[in-house]
Image (cartoon, rainbow, N blue to C red; front, side):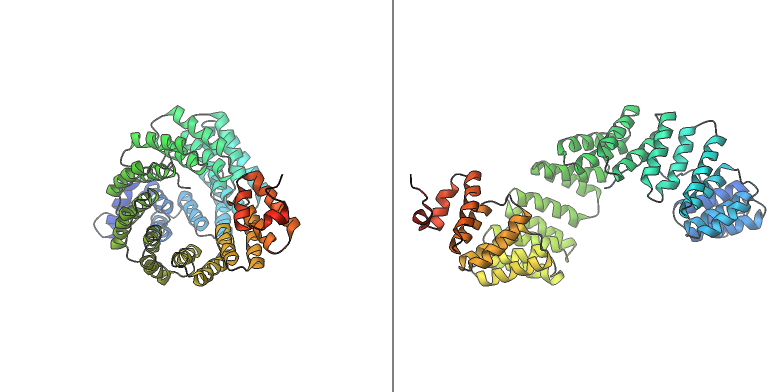
Length: 460
């Protein structure tokens, strides 16, 4: 799930880094004090540019060979590149062993080495050594555990920091994220609402709230959250896209199209925008308009399997089976291992009354993905039509096991059992079908007209 943070990577080092990079080009002086070099190394580290930060560190140690701060940065690079043992040994030798940043790095090394008991002792020392801003201290420690996906421990630390000061927005963002990772959605929603109570103009909190409601399929609340986020930043393309998606889920297709068009003005992914709009028109059963936008998507991305299958589906709905088959073939030329495409191929053959080829295509789809109750039922229906009742029954029973709500599934099983002469089983499933829909008895007799005498149906 995409989410946004209330903060960005620290930009305070940008001017120093620019001067450093000009120095590398030969356009500036080559002296930097210790703090400047630590800042340069940190800047590259935060962006994952380990080669650049190693190069800057080498310069720093040439200019300031006795700097514990720069040696600590060396240990941090070792941690970033996975050489944890070497990082820990270096940190253990530093004279400034009780320095806050050094202790945090040692904590990270211990956690990475699964030395959790020692890590717990050290983090208590860190907390005890600080008297102010304990919420920020707990946040810093939590980041160590967060980086390794240890969310339970992170939650414990963040909750303690929240107890100390309950308006630390950065901490609250991380706490909400941890709750999300543990599927504690109600708690996460509550935290984002707390952030909004602190500052209603934090766009990321509204966006993340929308994402949570979207995941929970509470689309009306998601829409409200995205609208608030766009009120704060109307040019946020990701929020605009998510709003369009939620309108689609609410079957507000015209509004969704309008919002997708707004998104299209913000992005270079024109093929994707056209695809989304085409899907809206398809849902509205405006198949000609849908095809126009699917074609637009193909113009900017020719190898676009979703557009080919989208056109094929529209043509299927328009009963243009031959034309539909052409686009299915184009989709299969890109990937012939997609179960849905084989289903669409089967449906074209059904439309052309070629049940033999339709059955082959349905069976191919099931071989690629067995968990398709509708497809299994379609296979069973073809076998039923071919009077292969045992095969039909086999597929009906698998289908009902996957989805007992399939329309008329109990009726069809009853018919199959009747055709096979298993009257007791037939009656069991027929009674279930009639309980679900009393008109089923009439349908059963239409399919099995002689059953009135055999089962005594329709008699007083």
